[in-house]
Length: 194
Image (cartoon, rainbow, N blue to C red; front, side):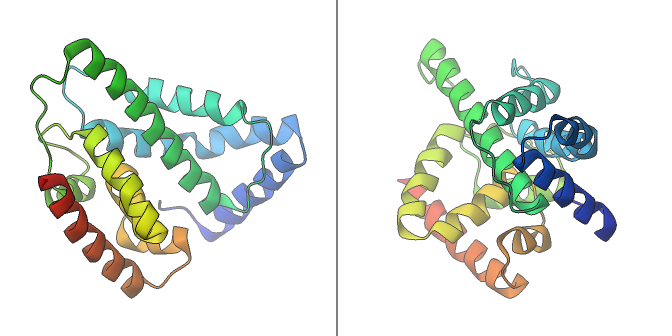
């Protein structure tokens, strides 16, 4: 998320206005965050099959609708907003995958290793389908054991964030984020192989 220091504060200020119920703040926020949300959506969609019926624009639009539908809003800052948006997009894709799987009954799904996913996140493209449902279930189990590691995987794998951006989002040192990422990947690799 390459955004200037001033822009980060401006987004945080506008989010504070939204917290206070300002419709003007929301109208100002949308163009400020739309480009970054489209980048995140593109990262998610890069791992989906080429014939996926959901497009990045539709994913961003659905994310906005779900964000707007929240009864209570209490954004701490820009990082909190984007972390929540990543989680919302993940839920949208999981819901979509469940619907699609119910229709297909699970035929032809190919698992993507986290190493391949990391390479895809860094390159901005995905070469094979990820079994998003299996990853989602594994992340839920990981979160029960280590919430931060689960969030790191969510931000890296689903959000396409770099390790620096992930560390910033979680307010931890890059070395800590790297250790947690390595540990989570190892655990998930074993979990997904089972």
